[in-house]
Length: 129
Image: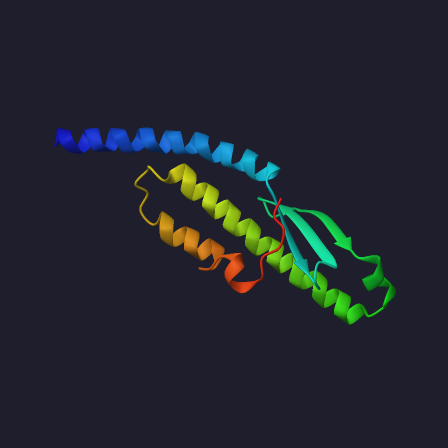
């Protein structure tokens, strides 16, 4: 009976440590950046690890073509790529922080969060900051 209580105490201690680490993860995710691009880099979207869009760059030559439908499609593609990279970056950081803790279901939760694939599997690699 007391063996179970010591295991519970250890689990509670790990949960407290994880709570502190989650705050660190959030702060780090605010600082980290990834870039999604489309149209050979003519459209770039930069997001942080919290999926906040920080920057949008559209090449002036692309804008001068006045093809709004193509421009809209490229912006959507770049945003989707940036978000996928941001999710993967976030999942990797959570995995790094929780690597030593036996958290049931963490692998499955991270896989659902990222969609089960890395952004490099669905999109060609672009620059990451």
